Amino acid sequence: MTHEESAVSRNASRYRWLSLVLGFVLFPAPAFALIITLSFESVPGSVPLTGAGTPNASLNFGSVSAFEPLNPGVNRTVGASSYTISTSVGVRVTRVVSLSPNYTLQARLQSAHPLTWQLDGVTLSTTPVTISTSQPFGSSVPHMLSFVVPYSQPAGAVTTVLEVTAIGN
Amino acid sequence: MRRAWLWLLPLALAGMSGNVAGQQAGPASPRGGISLSPSVVMLSGQPGQAYRQQLRLTNHTARELAFRLEAQDVVADEGRRAFIAAGERAGSVAATAVFSPREIVIAPGAVGIAEVTLTLPSRSSVRGVAAIFRGQTIVGTDRGVAMTASLGSLITFTLSDDVRLDGDAPEVSEQTESSNLAVTAWVSNVGSEPVVASGAAAFLNEAGALVGKVALEPQRFMPGERLAFRAEYPALLAAGRYRAILSLEYDDHARRVLTRTAEFAVPTAGGDRPSADRGADVRR
Image 1 (cartoon, each protein chain N blue to C red):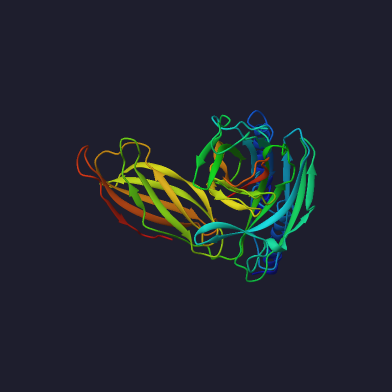
Image 2 (image 1 turned 90 degrees about the vertical axis):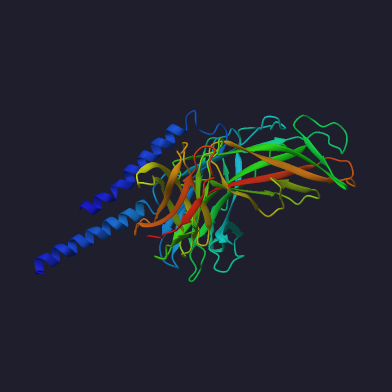
């Protein structure tokens, strides 16, 4: 290699490094707009949500008991020592220019609760638990929310806070 | 010089994606939800390095929303993806997460910006972290169930060239009056790095002529994760013998390809049931 060629090569190498550094400064991560969104939705035939279409919704099961009539959209299964009350809630997660094929859904209770709560049959606690690892984007996916009431449970209001998390896969 | 211009490509792409996102913010945008960007970040580097990533959460509602930021390790346990609390696993990357700020309140229609700094411990097998905005705003707790939404970004790290996939022999489920013929192949990430694989399934007849091709949606594998690729032939196949070839491309640098084949027969209507004569052959 001649002295001139060597200088040209050094300049080219310097330029390459400069462009590399510039690239990392401007785009430290892949520069694609990867966006996911989440909202709660009412499910036809289930208890309607207050605040449907938003990330902060609520639902009211109404008065429940082992044998009395229930509000529309509330289901009940009766067991030997307890009964289970359930309804469906919709979770809609959408994507915009996302490389994720689907998403993971997690749920937890924000504070401990004396009754057993389940989402799609998965028992909830204050620790996040995975409900599904391959949820489809776009449509509102219904999930069965239920709680188990022992016959020994005294009458009273039942309230809880459910946190639902979507993470792109 | 030409290489330097390559750095303008992300600029152009960023502009394009911004436009796309802008279009989506119209009628197709969430009516009142929250959105997180980026939802996935793929980083490459060395053990011991620190990374800083900006995360943007948009509040599309008419209500002020509060969030607390938290990190979890993303791994695979017995082939399935698992999210582990920070510090519970040796080499936890989530335990190194420093959020700034740790809590954020976002006004209606506004964008909340937080930064997370992650440091990769040496000899850690963890290659993924979920950075989660946990919703703290509760509405309507007086009677019943209040629900609050959280969103998480997946951040993956590639630290070596150990990018490898392996696949089982495909299984063929026969076509019926109500279902199409489908070929399913279980694929495992047997390397130590995250992998995104996608590809196609080609269906050849006995003479070796292509009768159809089905795209396989991309899937992301954490190290040790096992996922199924399923190709459903969209039409009724005529009686005869066929070969399905599933080809998965992965590793952007080395352009590796994993190929699996399955041979099967489609009987004449009312004839014998199809037999699936499965074979496997790997090309990397």
